[in-house]
Length: 291
Image 1 (cartoon, rainbow, N blue to C red):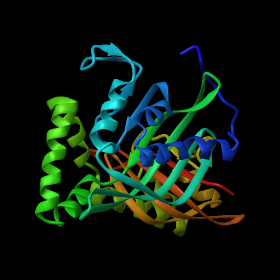
Image 2 (image 1 turned 180 degrees about the horizontal axis):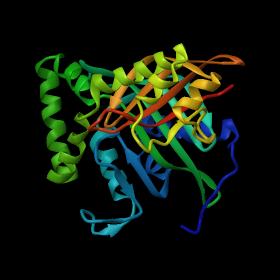
Image 3 (image 1 turned 60 degrees about the horizontal axis):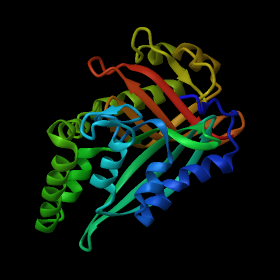
Image 4 (image 1 turned 60 degrees about the vertical axis):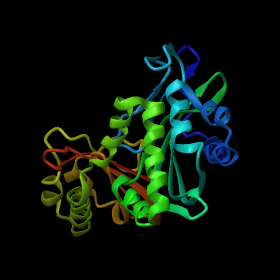
């Protein structure tokens, strides 16, 4: 970890985006070494959020050594067999984070194509003098994606069966089960909580907003990188209002494309609402936008 340094905040926008853009470029070129090389020695991939994370830099039982084997297996399983295109609607740079609001189009066979709405969060760091990805969180909904795929008929069913066989070969039973855990999410109930919070903020109802948060919740970071505010203070200050458009439930988090209103105007942004799975109350809110 000696080469892992704190980098200036904010990172120059063009540098942050150039680093992140390395991912779709490597994916399009089917260059596994370039893709894996984007990540820091100690890094995390959660794809989708809610599934078991892939960890680099720790001892890996399947390879029998410390290194990036988990990231390489992820590439071999989910990226290598497919043509993947990134359709980016918006990039937001806040501090060391880049958030992408996008759809990903996956061509698994000439007649089998699936398009998946997604929010990506890249946390960047400096390692050996270069920007690297320390954490990648991919927020997308697995069950709807599988449903869209299966609706394409027998040719898609064969591809799904091949994917599960490839997962078992590359990830083992435990790793396959860990990926399948991404099917569980806070779902429609979590999305309703986010809609209720947006409504309470817009009405200026601090009590209703506070009632949506769990005891000991971190609060609302608006924008990300600023000290968190309690829901009551956030509403009482009235400086930020938001309207969710595209919402996705991934694990215990609801991500949302947002129209954000501030005293400087209306901005496009993305929000992440982390919920307690049992109570469906909010633990933390991170709002991302650029003035």
